Length: 46
Image (cartoon, rainbow, N blue to C red; front, side, top):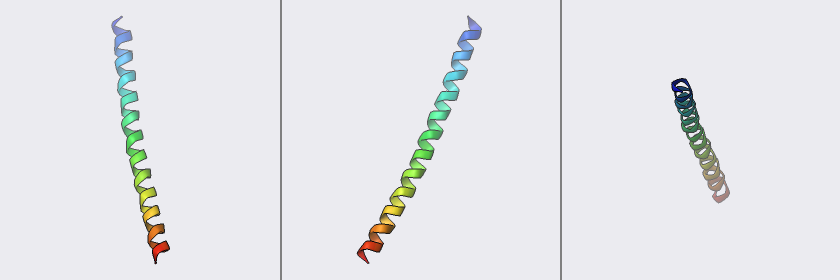
């Protein structure tokens, strides 16, 4: 039973790490998209 618990904890840690890295990459993508959109808007206005 203890071994199963430790496996669950390990799985939880891995999935939470994955979740954090996914949020990080998503925010980076979001920032890139916002930058591109702003640049396009500036070009459109100019």
